[in-house]
Image (cartoon, rainbow, N blue to C red; front, side):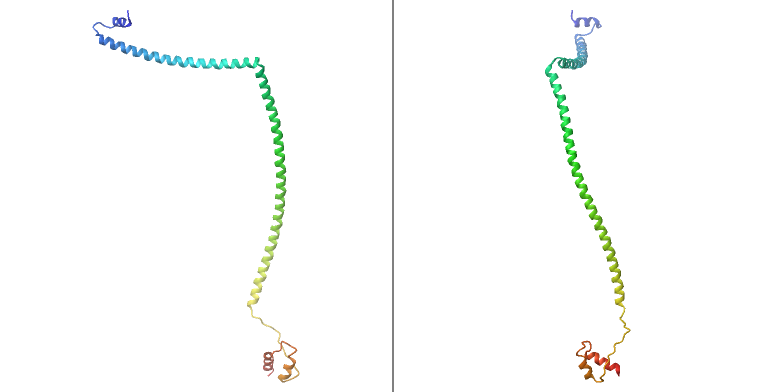
Length: 192
């Protein structure tokens, strides 16, 4: 007896063959969907379980390899020594690099100090020059004010001569370059 026959007995009488086929198709689709869903869940669980077991097996195999294999232990010892030697070399390189930078820094610092001293001397010289320039400007201002005032002399020039006539004055004026004919005429006009 097939499943269809069992299903037909459970169904009420008078149901057509087409109705039975439709119900059968619907049940088969439902069962297939449910089976697919359960299979996908089961596959995910099996994959996770196998991955976990595989990782555990790898870890166990690695432990056994470490315990029994001489080559593996030699490689580990070599790596340890290599890291120690690299650390020593690095610290030596660092020390030499640091000392090189320290010397360069000291040289640069001495140059900076020298330049600072020159700058201070130059600034001092500039302030001295600025003071001198200020004094000169004040002197120029006072001289300009004096120059604007007309010159008034309190002294009067007198020409002293023993001769009354011009001929005597002109003959004596050859020795004196300041006594020109104009000066003599001016003195004559003042004497009159």
